[in-house]
Image 1: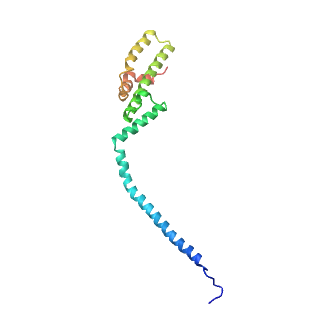
Image 2: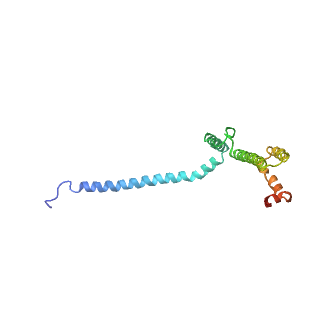
Length: 161
């Protein structure tokens, strides 16, 4: 036997190596278990999302929260708060349409007054336009557009002053 060997030499190193090997195995097992679990849960995720998307109650809650948030931000009037998306969009279109009709009316009246049109002509135009400011729906706007594009009115866009 060699006289340089001492009791316990290399034991600590061997213990560290063995512990490292075992810890590596434990970590590998843990990582695999975690990802196996995650993978098993992910398989159900598309079905879960589909069920949530097809839930009318949840859809209504989200739409309500959305329109309430828009109201709180000052983007829609209080009366529109809580409306489902389709009604909210329809109402916004209609409001914009009616606002546009009124601004067009105001511009027409102002243009006639500013160009010294005859007072009877201004009042006749006023009486012709006013009844059309209400009672028309955004979806029916082509009624006016098509009428304006026919032969009777087409000269207005082409005429020169």
